[in-house]
Image (cartoon, rainbow, N blue to C red; front, side, top):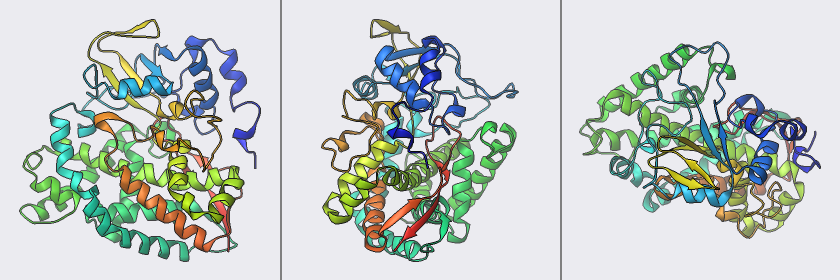
Length: 425
């Protein structure tokens, strides 16, 4: 298997460096499965760290009411991303955290795409589920489920790690957070995939299908909401249904927050779990390090999250004119904070394309965002990954990736659809 990031040139290097700067568009999802975005980000960081794209990528024959991308700024250096992400006074999260503008009610409103005070009020309603007491209660259950899943994978036989391990563990966790029927847990994975999919991905055939499936999602969750009104519970639906500031939200806002919580709880952890295996296969010496020194597991988890960066970017919209790199981001302009590029910025991380479980500043990564919108479930994600690594190292001498994995066709969710592996006992 080609170890793409060990190569002298990054994938897509010749195309990225032969094109004119103004034609470079990292939002094109078709370049991501082949890892061709790395060379684009490398060039932008070095030559045009505040880069304007006149018209973001759109699929061919897209419907007239599909969300349009339009022009946007790409911010690709670590320090610049941090400056914008922590400046909620000049940069807004409304109306969306992705580049396309909302159209015909999609994407629906969600608290991550809201500014203060609404953002803080809604976030506070669900925050207790990932507070320290809740995490303490869930730790034993997470470990028990991780042990069960790992004990039931075939040893010395080929299987799909994404399906058998990453997806299974994250959907079990999501079902717990929502108190969702376990037998229907794979619906959560489907809705998560559909929520971030376009027709170009093959996950859905049309925008109409995507919206129809998401309405099925809200219908299912509305029945759970109605069952839990007026009841006590520690799950997310009960918190939303009975929270003083959320119990009267309309259906589309409920759907928006469901999408946020499902995608946040599924895609990020699932793809970091899979990225763990892919990265440690590309850099096998790192597996050897943590195998003999389990004290490295917490830093290993931080480094994997930096290296993988499962959500590639977040959008902000300028509230006022802002000067940066001798250019003017005008009021109303869209800005893409490319976390995935900031986490590979050599100005911050030495030998940034390499996976290094002993990296001193691994915890400085920005994969969870920063400022008031920092991922509120980051500690739960880290807990799941810490337990996964601890239990893997107890059981397996190695997890071998036997062919190049298949990746998402997406410039937002950076992840894997399949990864064929063999685990060695």
